[in-house]
Amino acid sequence: MSYRYTPQPAIDPASLPGHVHAYCEYLKAKNYAEQSIAYQAMALRAFVAWAHERGLHRPTEVTRPILMRYQRHVAYALTTKGKPLGIQSQCNRITSVRRFFRYLTLQNVLLYNPAADLELPKRPHRLPKHTLTAEEAERVLSQPDLDDPLGVRDRAILEVLYSTGMRRMELVNLRRGDLDHARGVVAVRMGKGQKDRFIPIGERALAWVEKYLADVRPLYEIDDRDTLFLTWRGHRLDKHWLGHNVRRYIERAAVDKVGSCHLFRHTCATLMLENGADIRYIQRLLGHALLSTTEIYTHVSIGKLKHIHNLTHPAQMPDAMRKHGDVDADHVDAGDQPPRAITPREPTAADVLAVLAAEADEDERDDAPDAA
Image 1 (cartoon, rainbow, N blue to C red):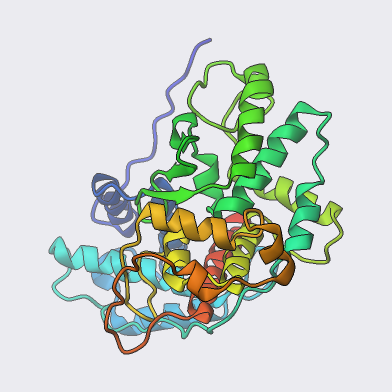
Image 2 (tube, rainbow, N blue to C red):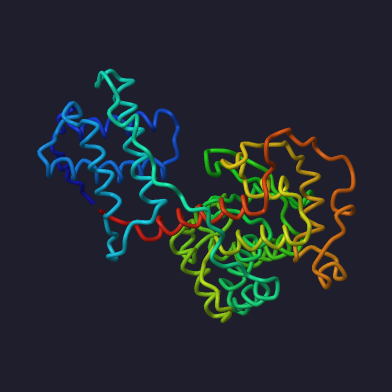
């Protein structure tokens, strides 16, 4: 097969597109996540297109009043489905522009930063739209066809999402060596913010993963020996396909709840909170190193987190505790406790769930890219 090189049109390095390209290369050099760079590039392309329509082609032509006009434009912009941009999407677009102009100022392209005083739209303090009950979660978990090898794979995927509360991309990126079967923990590598962490995984979820590894994965392994969950073609899962597949099982279970992978993340956190888990352990499990509303972070050992996970996750709790729906706080907090930081206010369950709601908005943005 022959390949033909197609020359790309030259970009004026002094133009807005030229500086956007240089900015993306700068982010790559700073080791930003590919997904983050791709979104910032998309947001900045939307700004550049808006600027070109108004005869603005170079950064020096952009002033603070012009950026305020762009912010108003974003506030009234519509998605590709004809709906208004969500507050989170508006904030993300304006934040990308602010960071871009800060970069231009640091590079001495501009003498002052015209975006320095741009204020972000006020985010509503919302709770998750939907959360499964323990019974509804079990109903969804029972949907895959276990006579089909791919159904066994899907059951293992659902069990891991429910047991760990990990993000969709964190599951997609799991490798076989990330699971420590002896200790009952899983390593989440390069999570949000390029951070690694260890989190507990329940015995039932591990059992399904072991069954998948023994009976199913060898059927589809071609060249990829590391990725944990594979497609029928032997490739790593696509995050959009994964979200669609999980949503299909939720709809099939007829639980009257809308959601996908993030619904299991909400459910895992909510049920553990209801069963008595301390907020700090939920923060560690979810990978929330810092809650913006509290600015608090206390180190929690993986051993203690595993202990709390066993006591409060519905798939791990003893039958008597699960039946009554609560756990004695003294039992949960037995043993040495990490010291509580002295702050004006400690995190609450509402804080954790509000962060989860914001994450869900980001997932919706990724699944349905919007355009101004």
